[in-house]
Length: 579
Ligand code: ATP
Ligand code: MG
Image (cartoon, rainbow, N blue to C red; front, side, top):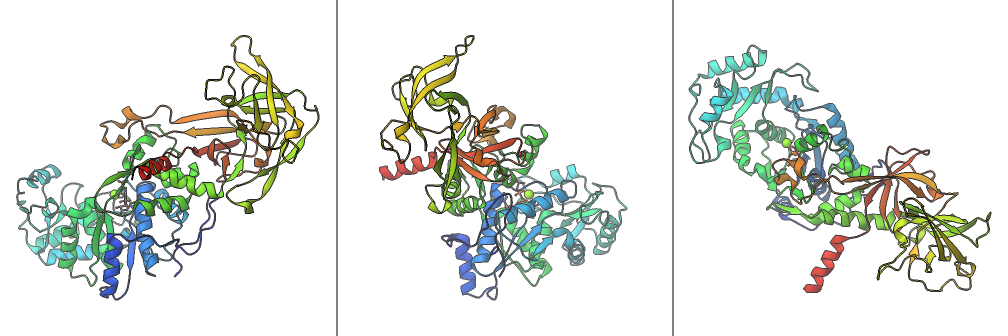
């Protein structure tokens, strides 16, 4: 079975091998295991991931992808990728391509099982004709408004349409003419003939087809009637021999309809629909429609804006597919809706990047430091560890010279009590280099701002030197002025100020005005000269960063993936200590 076994590499992602440790069980995996035990489907496991190509995928879709592809992989089964492309006015090939890219990037592969609901339009039409012939569907000619009124409410039964009793012959004739393009949009629909008094509104003669004189991205102008989701979905599942049709909870009330269509059509295959809770994350929304509004309103730069919870946004931000998969595994699969803390996702990202991101030194808000007693023209190449978590990643050389830059934050003229970093008269260690002491400061005459520090260094404190182990209270990162590369660094914060932006009536009122901060005069150690889009690093003491696609060797651009402060780990620790 080739599914997912070969790693995909995109944008600097490393090669993966699937599956990792088998996920713990959940109620869906229990159903699949029981079905295998009872040989319900002849030992087959066939799942599908059925996105509508009306936008880019988000982290919620990742949950569904991991579940569907994951279950198939665990049982040597297959998972189909099927585009639910029945709504030509909202769909686009651009989205089809982006969805394929994102599924691959997450580490899954559908092999040759790529399908489109639009490939079934002819068969769906035949099935509709079969239902009409069996007296189970009819052409209705009520207007959309009338249909709504006739449908009734949750507490009142609906009313039968006056067209419900049309003869089979008349229905067949009208449906054929709908297809032939004889009628205007909105004049007729094809409806299933079920029960207008059903307590389940979905069963009150749901619409199966509507007239839409729109060009479809795959079938062009071949059709001017398009099947509705509920009719299309179950038939597509049946045609593909799906065994377990896994979807989100909001489709629970649609299951009787799913089963009704397949029962009435006597399809040889009748997949089992199983619903699970969708993923919600704090401080974000999870809807393609709302994402589109964010993009169209100019609040973000596009689908792949690193602040977006889309797969494309996360990829650009520097999240790894391994971390996203691990997150999806850890959140589990349940039957009750809940909201997952964003800090948990960020925790997974840190865990993964900690293992593999190369450490480098970068100064985001530089403060110039002149080391007065260091020889003018001397440059030393100092050894630095690439990743303390992984000795195999080796070491590199970092140049040191008379003028260096440190972080503005790492100096205080009047240090508060618990500030142990640099201050007048104080000593700190410059990482991999020497202990330096601040002897004087230079201020901008006009603003009073500190613009330069003068220090002296102790030559004996270099690593390997006689005083290498002398203790000081802080170690700072730094870059050499003549060697550093300049770079733009983009810092991100959550897009919204409230944990539940989806609940706001107008999400623009809860947007975080400081979700993006651009620092244009950052300085990076020279080993990053060849950094290319997608490369990931830990900037020591600052967080994890990755190279943005906007970056070039002449103008480096980095995104901060995530800071180092792990709120989630702290929460977990606090929790376990109270247990
Ligand atoms: P959106 O509301 O963002 O447009 P959708 O459900 O309409 O999402 P689809 O393209 O129809 O998007 O979804 C494809 C699959 O992904 C479906 O099986 C759907 O149930 C699943 N899915 C969508 N959102 C989530 C989520 N937040 N959590 C888990 N699964 C999801
Ligand atoms: Mg949808």
